[in-house]
Length: 243
Image (cartoon, rainbow, N blue to C red; front, top):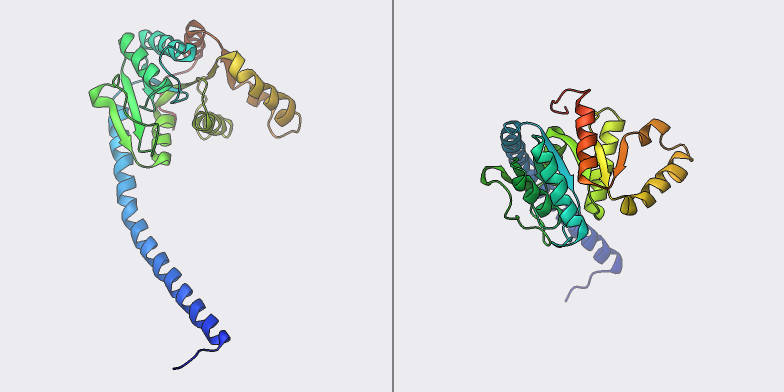
């Protein structure tokens, strides 16, 4: 029976691992090439659907907020008020704040849009989305593009990591000039004041943002204040896609 020396065993194992990695990388590259077509299809479908809707406002917030919670009911009022002013409402299409946004859109007689994402938990389409405006995405970055391209304003309700992700992405795009300035409204001073104080006293003080960057953000507490901010902004600016 032949025995391999320790050095030869190590070399054989390393060669096997290297070949396996190369094979998997090659398979991954082939898979990525086909992924391009699926990504393109999501962009095309999203652009075609949303371009037909007219001016919309996106509302973000936690999927975990239950009906009856003050933030849920306030979101219904915010969406309803904006819909009454002629804006469609775009949400992430799921439960919680997203559901409240779509419910308010329907109550206000506005277009109710849901941009759903496939997730292992939390996400399922809510019943208040218009049938012809219920879109599904596999890729977060495609979905984010749909939000940012066609939303004429962004309303941030209390939420978790996903809400913060959307908030800072929109703020960054506006700050860097990669999209037009649009209303960026934080609803609920009790929830958002702590973050705003940190931005003011830490990030701004350390010089990581400029004073004018803070002017991009507005904090309000009522549906009427949200509508006032949006209407005031568009009394001075045209309604158009952001990029």
